[in-house]
Amino acid sequence: MQYEFPNIKLLDHLQLEVEDQEGRLAARTRGLSSPLFSWAFNRFFDIYNTIGPVSTIGASNVYTLYVPPIPSPMHARHTEAFLRRWLFRTRVPLAVTIGVTDRCQCRCVHCSAVFAGAPITPMTVAEIQRVVSESVALGATNITFTGGEPLLREDLEEVVATVPRDKAVSLVFSNGIGLTPERARSLKEAGLWGVQLSLDSPDPEEHDRLRVWPGCFDSVRSGVAAARDAGLLVGLSTYATNEFVESGFLGRIAGLGAEWGANELTVFDAIPTGRLRNQDGLLLTPDNRERLIREGLELRDRYRAQMHVVTQSWTNSGAGFARFVGCLAGHYQFHIKADGSFRPCDFTPLTIGNVRDASVHELWHQLTTHPAYRKHHKKCRMQCAAFREKYLVTATEQNPG
Ligand code: SF4
Image (cartoon, rainbow, N blue to C red; front, side, top):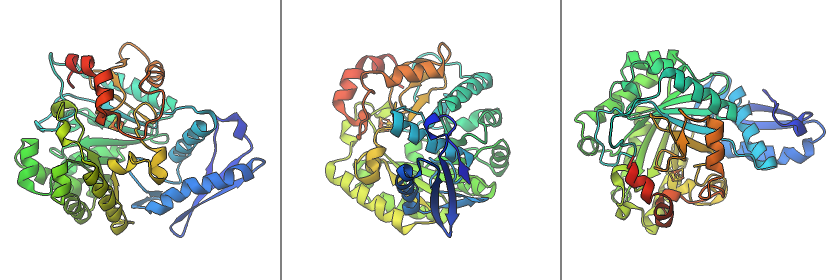
């Protein structure tokens, strides 16, 4: 498939051909500037060859739920965003998370999305349509709907349908409750690409205790099956505390994910935000972080070509390719809460403005020029006490979500 870069005048004459050759992505360049870019493109696509595909959709491979299928028109946009960053230092928000409701059945002990104070008025479909359209115009290729619990919105299918299928993939983060075979099929028909289901523990009773919802573990298991049967991609997400690492939960959760047929497992670090605010004791010790990274990479290899395993500890490690990832907030990502509050990421309670009062373009500009986000950080800002003390004390008091 030929990739074009219409927003980069300099590359008018560059042609990039991307194809899968017996399971390996190959990139061929033609045109005047070809020698200059050939090496870089090969390195870029080799990153995916290292991971290996976890699914196939038509003539495209899926390597991770965070990146559109390759090759595809969405991935051509994704590649263009990296070129704009590399050549002109232009920051493109590739991943946008949008809260669509504050309602949820669970009362998770670690919830990062709690709303305090008066009830909120969630964005309407028309408002979401506008922010999706403005985000895609900025370059977003991954739109993820979060909550609260997004499935509680009866019009979630209309919300999903706001994402243009030729420009970005759409995902829903869910606790699994309500992800019936019928709902999974109707979301798929609306254009949904995949679901991300939370699994906090490999032990059913412990997962249900942490979620304060009996039967939640079973909902995740049946939700994975329903999503798979409907043709949706499935990611599991969990979060690591010291106890999680020391109990060997990662291997057990990965085993469940592989057994159930998940395509990806994401392991976030425990972050002192929301209901975990001020609980710095949960932050991973250096030894446990190292162990988590090592085990995550081992599991990535073990489940290669079946389920991609990625840990936030690795993406924030600065090692190898991870040095280009680091903290995504304000660099590749932003978050909009269900009430329209515009934030750096879904774990950072620092409100820059509201999409009800300003364009996404304007707010992205404010975020990327904010003193805390001008420079790229390898490590998680929210795990840095100095960052939280300097930028969040007031914001957190006013809005603990
Ligand atoms: S602050 Fe950065 S690294 Fe930490 S959770 Fe947010 S985006 Fe991820």
